[in-house]
Structures are given as C-alpha cells and as structure tokens.
Image 1: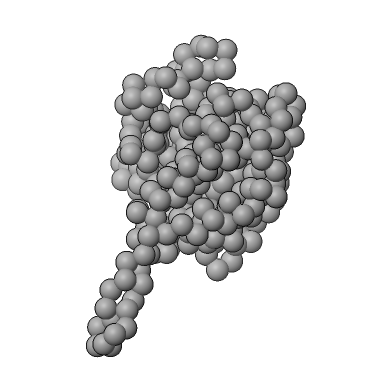
Image 2 (image 1 turned 180 degrees about the horizontal axis):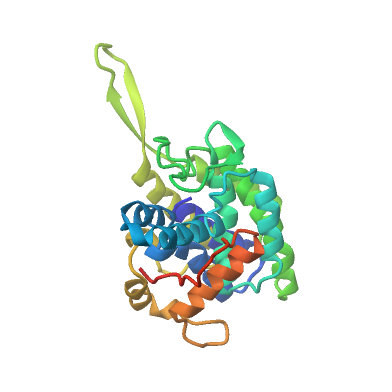
Length: 292
C-alpha cells in the first residue's frame, strides 16, 4: 500500500475504534515509516543488494530479507497465516510505539502484497511485485481487498483501544460503507477512442486518485468524528535517508516515554517485529542494519 492505505487508513481506523488522537497519529506515522526511510524500504533494499560489490552481497541479502520479510510481508507464503501472525504480534505491542506502527505496516502489506489474481499467496522476497505493471499497492485497483483490510484492521484495533480506555467513535457497520466509498474514489480521464468516432476510453489517473482519496479521508474524519487530522502529509515526501527523515519529522521522533528515537532504537524495533512474526533471518555474523 501507499500513503492512503498505510498512513491515512491506519489514522482513520485508529480514531474510529477510540484511540486517543495522539496515539492514533503515532500509529499512522510509524505505520508509514517503512516506506519513508531508505533502510526500511523494500524496493531500496533489493536495489542495494543488486548493486552491491561482491564482498557485500551476504550483508545486503541479510538486510533485504530482514526488511522485506519482516516489515513488508514479502515472504512468498500464504496470506492468511501471515495476517494471523501479524495480528497476534500487534496484541503483544503497545499502541503508539514504533513497533506497533511497523506491525500495522506489515498487516496492511499482508493484503496489498498478496498476488494479483491469487490473493491467497503473497509476493516473494526479492523483486516482490516490481514486475506487476498493475500496481497492487493502489487501493482502487483492488477495492474488495481494501474493504476486507479495513474491516480486519477495525476488528484488530478495537479491543486494543478499549483496553487503553477508549470508546469507539464509529461502529464497524458505519466504517464498512466508508471503506467502499474511499476505495471507489478515482479520477478518470476520458479520451476519444482512436478510429472510433463518438467513442471514448476511460483511464484511471493514479496519482490524482490517491490525492482525492486522501482528501476524502481527511473530510470524513472531520465530518464523522469531529476530529481534524494532523497536517503531516507523507505523500508530499520522498523516501530518503534516516538522517533526513528524522530531521524533517523531528516532532514524531520520540518514544512513548519522551526519549529521543535514535537509529539503534529503529534497528531494535525492526528486529522485534521480525522476531514476533517469525521472519528474523539467521546470520553468521552480527550484521548491523545500516542507516542508509
């Protein structure tokens, strides 16, 4: 998934189930982070492995497998067991923590990274869905799958919000038609069909569609829950180095106890998540995850 799925949907559903707005925002920021920081990004890790000099291949393969399998659910396995495992892991982590957000990202990817045409199976480690021209990360490409994801996310987060003292702001029945509506928001270009007078082709414009989906979720949050989403807009930023990300988003780079988040904290969170979902690669040497 991209920002409409990972950030905005996590934010919207976190608010709907009753999380404090500050925790809902943290859930969303950390759910988006694996697509914002080079070292945590699935595509960047595979590109790094492919371009690594000979002596670095083992190291970069370890990093790629840790990130792709741990954070992005690119395991080549069955979708449902990965979803169940990730759900169980979410119930072991504290909402608002970096680990919890990373698991939310993975949970979303157990849907988005299921194969086009056979959604019972996930894309494999390595190239992932790079060769699939009909981008499965776009929520309007597979609307039914997005609706299933939102329903499952609501069901997963609701008891956690209640345990934290929250009360749902919206019910599952209220969320369901909104998920259908959001996934249906598209911007369509109509153009004349070559050689066929008075006929038109319709083409969905992906970037404008995603912008429209984001606007709709922001509007729905205000209209349905009387809460204004934070102005942070990750869709306006590129994936970049850890130092640039941290500098540009310093307002979020704090642990729940207020301590500043450092790169070793990020690495520890990645390993915790990978271990909880059974995807921490075996290693002969103590390779660190580099803050690329």
